Image 1 (cartoon, rainbow, N blue to C red):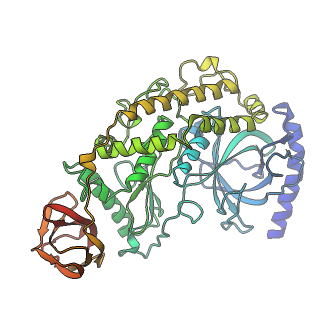
Image 2: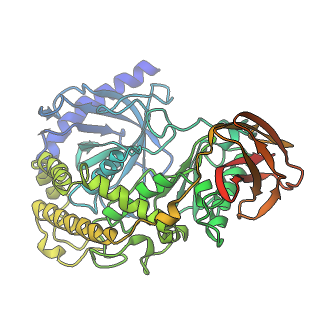
Image 3: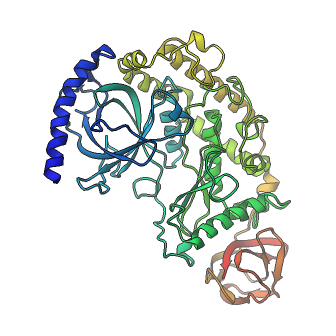
Length: 531
């Protein structure tokens, strides 16, 4: 049976290649400097869901080489499951797709496509709104520069059932995988600490909601996750939001630092704001949490309507922070609050200025943009012959779109917008001063300190190696920064010390924080889970 299916697909593919010539009345497409994706669905329509079985042949002879539709597929030649994807984008003539590579019996088949790490889940982004095909690759590139994982992007040309479909961006789907978002693999039976603490991926979006407050659990799949796991990540994020709603949200012990990886939030804000993404924060705002880790912002996703490419929420304005824009909706309340903390905003300034010294130099990023534009110099002619959208009112066009009637004019508009946007950010962030008095943190009284067990039930043990003799007090705080227990004084001697703190005063299980005070100065801080 499998052999018959393979022979059927091979025969279809031979006929299919001939059909491409017949379809020349639409677009004369025979070769490309881009990889060519040739999909045959055996005359099935591709639905929104579920995925249907189809055949994919990829012709790719390497960088700088010409690829022909008359070649036998030499990069991938096999089965896929394919469906439509997207929300707003799905309503338009050029459809976006999601596909998974499969073996001959329909199982997942991990493969490396176009140099990306082996996996089976892939995205074909149509980029119908972004006529440059640059905004998504650029944003992902800028995020990877910061050291974060973001989807790798490859430009391809595609044919489906003998019809030329244009340029697509092959992207890695956001998912947990060693070659993608490398967080813990969470199984349904892992419902106790520390296993239950990670990993999770969830999205803030206005389209779906299964955790409340516009949060949608992506990994593990909501229907496959144990109820305890769904409750854990919901309550953990709720605790972070509760702190952000409190007067003590900037506290260095029990404030937002206890719940989030601050640098990841800084990097997320920088990419979203540098691209002035109209969908920032509230529509494809991803977060993830690894085992025993804090909430991380990202990965970045969905920048079709960034960099002056949308009349929502304004008409391509260059200035202003998107996290506090008065006319956006669904932006989580904590983003502007974070920036109101002088320490956080100063970290944004420092990070931005460091990046601008090298990888984020305008010249370097303009060169990246030009590299994509040059790569598409031939393919864009076919794209806009197939989809004549240049200079047309497609959706949320910004002023002057009628004059942007060539590909190069769209690229120039993007470059001019970004150069001016980054200059505005340079000036705006330069005015944020160093909050030295606020930055002051714990003084290293101890050479070494180990606090265990974590999670804890009845007690915490402190093993301390001290430089000098002192007297220490230990305070325990709940997640709102309220002191729930204070120890009697512990006498610390030079060298090795051990002392135990009973947790008799703690009531409900949850996340708590401790602070060791030497006199009136913080000597050490940490957190633990009370079972």
